[in-house]
Length: 300
Ligand SMILES: [Fe+2]
Ligand SMILES: [Fe+2]
Image: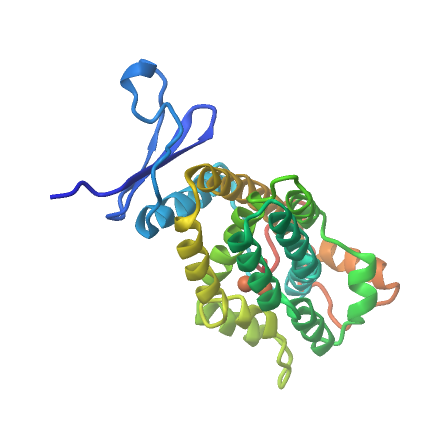
C-alpha cells in the first residue's frame, strides 16, 4: 500500500508543520534532534496534495492565533464595534483587486501564466467587496465615504500594509497565503454569527451584506476550496512560502484584531465621531474603563 503523502514547512526558527494527505497534522520541533536524523530538517521537494495542503495552511493559522489564545478578546457584539469592524472590512478589501492584478502581471513577466490566471480570477471575484462594506455603513446611518476616508482602525493598518508589500515583491507568491488566511477565517463565520449582528441593527436595516458574503453562507467557502486545490498544484518552494506567509498573516491578524477588540465601546465611538466630525446616531451602552472588553467581533 502506498504511504500517504507527507508535506512539511518550517514556520518559525524551531517549529515545523507536518501534514499528511490523510488529514493528520502535527507540530514538530527539531531541537535536540540531530540534523541528519531529522527528515524534516531540509525543505520538502515533492509534489503537493490537497489533504496535506489543507493541513499545512490551517495548521499555520492555528499556530499564528495560538500565541494570543489566552488573551483573545471575546467581547459582546455592539453596533459601535460592528461599525469599526465594517471600516476594517472596507480597508482590507478596497485595494485587493488592484493588488492581486499587480501580482498577476509580475507572474506573467516571470513566465508563470497559471499563477497569473489564478490571481486575475481572484481579483475579479473580490471586485466590489469594499462597496458591500460601504453599503452596510450607509444602512447604519453613518457617513460612510467620509468615515473610511478619515479612519483606518489602528489594528487593521499592519494587515493592509502586509498585503500591499507582498503584492509588490519581486516574487509575490506570498500574497496567496495572506488571502487564504483572511478568507479561511471569514468562512468560519456561521449563520448564528450573522443573526447576532442583525439583531443589533435597527429594525428594518440590512447591514450584513459584507458579513454574509464573507461567511460560510457566501463566496468565501468556494474561494477557500479553490485556493487549496490551486496551492496543492504549486511547486514545493511556492507551497513553503505560501504556508509561511499564511502563518505570518495569522500572527498580524490576531494581534491587530485583538488590539481593536480590546477597546471600550466609548473609545471606539470617540474615534468614529472624530473621523466624521459629527455625532453618530449611536451612544455607547456603557463607559467601561480602558481594557475592558466591549465591542463587536471583526467582520473581515
Ligand atoms: Fe472579499
Ligand atoms: Fe473572497
